[in-house]
Length: 447
Picture 1 (spheres, rainbow, N blue to C red):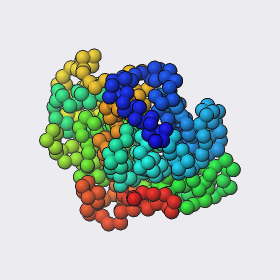
Picture 2 (cartoon, one colour):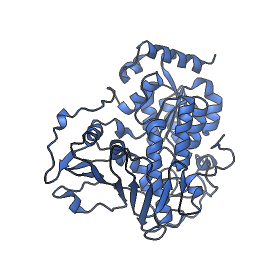
Picture 3 (cartoon, rainbow, N blue to C red):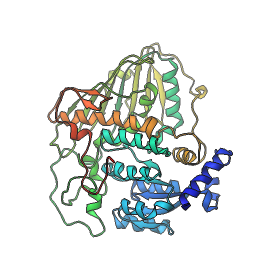
Picture 4 (cartoon, one colour):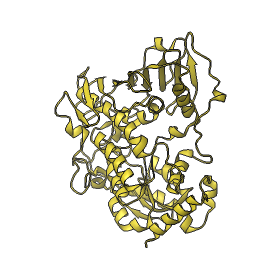
């Protein structure tokens, strides 16, 4: 039996006995027993990957590091001296498969699914940054594979574990504000260039493995403006402002109102060339009625666009946040993660004592979002933003907006009618490749 399998059996046994079920991070970090600690492989260790690796290192042992940039890899290697290093996640998983229990995936959007799917198919638990995937089909598949393999998963939308977000969910679901009518969500992104022509090619830095950075994406020469940060603005690699922030800022109303499976979406944009995302967009989602709420619309704004001030009455429009308009009052939730002020307002709005709001409390100690995931690995309850039950659906909703943005290449685009069950646009042809990608040879989507 492999060391990894022995370790997983130990973790399941201790969880069944109630040992370590609610252990705080500092206690987990103090456990020196090799068989009692989760062995992590970190895929992507620069930028946000540096933070994700640091957080899981407090909850287990980092045994493998992977990054396509040797400078980022060298910096991480100094912190985790016993970890083996790789520049290709495929080689890392093939080489270290028996020694790894779980992986973090903190790479460019377009390589989230290839790395996470390979790991999960090998039985590895998976933490993946937001947006969960680059395309809708990948998001659906990630949830299916996670459920099939019975692995513990979590998407990196850490606001899901914020107490103020969870309190807002409770308030909206309680009915105290009446039935929801519409939702407005906005962000201060992009903070990277969008709406530009493709940059001229330049020699690739010696430290960067460009072919591995491209991963499943079509070949193109290296140029400034892709690595390490500005890739989000390019259709081949990122998901624009919507993909970057909506899994955070749309998260609270998505949870509270169960905003799954939109039936239609339409966008107005500054225009785009099919290579770079537009400078700004306004996206309208339509959701059919459910047994718990009437039909609602959600409006998304980026690139400096915001909802009309009139919706806020005398409230100041924050830089980023959401507002849910209901029959008896409105809820303004501020901050990227709904982590700041939560304000109920309106002419006849009821008063809400936020100190008395009961909510699903996240686990204590350290960063609760990561603790939830490791607790699930050890046999505890699934993390809230796990792939099959939550993160896949949230990502599908978010990324459907980018189909509308793609259609809106010039100004107002045609409304996109969506059949969620069949994962198909019913009124516009030619969007199939935007829903389900074709990977370059060497990378696996379906098996």
